[in-house]
Length: 173
Image (cartoon, rainbow, N blue to C red):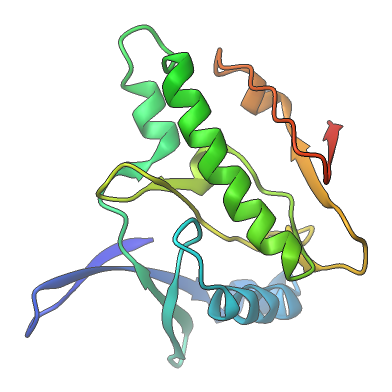
């Protein structure tokens, strides 16, 4: 991910570059297509917006809105006590939950919920960064519930969050 600027407007954007060779070597063609398709279809203030995608000879590019607050993980690491206050945790969890419910309403499961996939907008609100890694994290599904995976990495951040959403099933890995 790189910060780029549209010179005439001086507006900042995030540019994601994916190597065509890497995508082909690791057979991620379907994953890259799915990420582009889903990112282009979402329209929620709690999810990153893809503004454009294009390809070059060696790379695929995705232009995204820039989140000036950076990654939630970096903000967490900068905290003097090593964790957020309970009020901030509740605020971030609520924003992530709204983003997950938006995806759920469209039949999309996102399993990559972790601090490095949550960006902070200029106003401090959390914005989920959709990724479709391998195995696919962002996938359409026929079920009628959200599936959230919480990894041990997330638990190591001293912020244990109880997320109670009636339509949520939580799996511990």
